[in-house]
Length: 295
Image 1 (cartoon, rainbow, N blue to C red):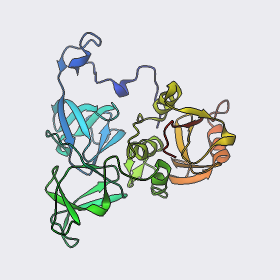
Image 2: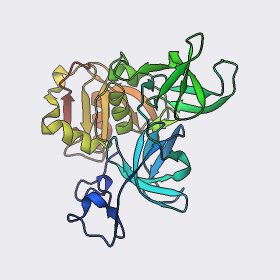
Image 3: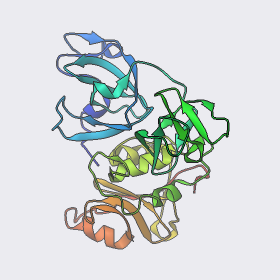
Image 4: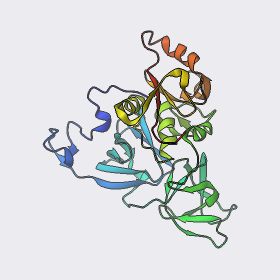
C-alpha cells in the first residue's frame, strides 16, 4: 500500500469537525476530544477511511491492539491506532474500553479461542498471527492458557511470550506464501505488501510504519542501512513505487502482490520489470537492511 505524504491525514487524528485534544493549538477545529483507550476483542477488524462498511480499508487491527478513540457515533469508533498512528474508523462492536498488559502473541497463521481447555471444545473466535493476548492462568495439564480479553482458552503451543518469538521476520513471512492479496489486510485471510512487512517485524519487536512510503522514509532517516542489490541477503527490504517486499535470498523477493494476487516469491529483476510498466523512470527505490541482528 502507498499514499501521498503531502498532508498525511493517515497519521493525524483531525477532521474538519473534530480533532484530538493534543492537537489543540496546532490544528484548527471547532471541537476537540480526549482519547479513550480501547482494545480490539474481535479476531481482527478493518480500519476504514469512512464510517461505512463499504468504505475502503486503510488497515486492519488485530485482537489485542489498542485504539485511541476520539468519537463514538452510530456504531462506529473514530480513532488512532496506538501501534503505528494510523487513523480511521472501526466498528465499535469490535472494541472494549478495557486495558490489558498482553503477555503472549499468536505465532501460527491462526489460533482458535476455545470455550474450555480442551481440543474438543467449541471455538468462540479465530485469532490471527500477531494477536496479543493476556494469559491469566493455565489448565492443570499446562496445555491451555485462559486469556483476560475474552472468556476463552488457547492452546499454549500456538503462543509465544512477547519478546521470545524465536524466528526471523523473513521466516515468519514464508508462512504466508499463497495467502491471497487484500488491500489493507494484515491476516492470512488476506494481506497487502506493507501489512506483511509490518506484521512480521512487529512479531519480533521491530516497529515499522504501516505504508510502504512511510517504511522507506523511516529506514532512509537512519533507521536502516542502504544495501546494493549485488550484496542483498534474506531479510533485506526492497522498495518500489507503492510496493515493498522482503528478500527471500540474494536474488528473489517474497511479497504480497496484486500481480499474482497472493504472497509469492519472484525474481527481483522480474518484479522490477512489473513496476517498470507504470514507473519507467524509477521502478526500483532501493534495498535496506535493519540495523539489528534480525536476519
